Amino acid sequence: MPMRIFLAGATGVIGIRMLPLLIGAGHTVAGMTRSPHKAGELRALGAEPVVCDVFDAPALAGAVTSFAPDLVMHQLTDLPDEADQLPGFAARNDRMRTEGTGNLLAAAAAAGASRILAQSIAWRPAGRGGAMDEMERQVLDAVGVVVRYGQLYGPGTYYPDVLPAPPRIHVERAARATLPLMLAPPGVVILTDETLPRAAVAG
Image (cartoon, rainbow, N blue to C red; front, side, top):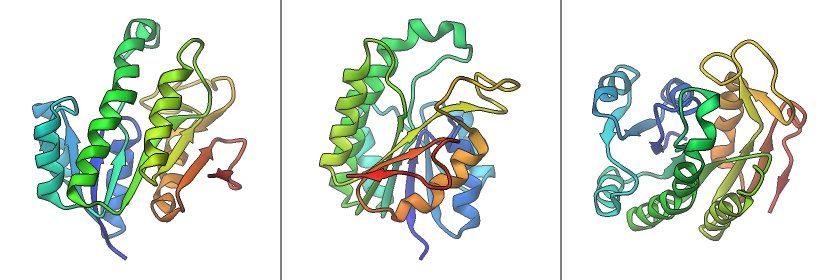
């Protein structure tokens, strides 16, 4: 059944691949980005562009409530373009996972969204597992679905031509495998080359 979907992180590496899949399946999608110059790209893909910063909680709540989604999909990260810059973005991405997730879940609750799906990862970076655990706890407390992706490889990722160490998953496969999870029961789903097609669910 077609849904109204608020996709936060719509221009990210998975979000931008989810959009045509969602539109093609007949869903109505609001694609959120914090970059005004990306609004045209979202519109061209068939989404309703929403320019908003996840850390502006009042504006975010207004945007999500105005769209009145059935499902809020969290594909937000704060990562650099180059892999060698990752250490400098650790604190920023941890904040996205914790405070950003909290703001998005609060906005979803205010809007009365009945379903939540949020991106996580299938490994724990050294010294930063706490941020991931907090993010997942928030989603599970909101009766949502946590999707733990393996390291992404393929076009537009940090590994366009080589395979990263496992756990890993091709970015296109990750996007396709996410689509049916919009109807998954609350819990944790692991999407990696090692688990597909038998994605493990726990919750």
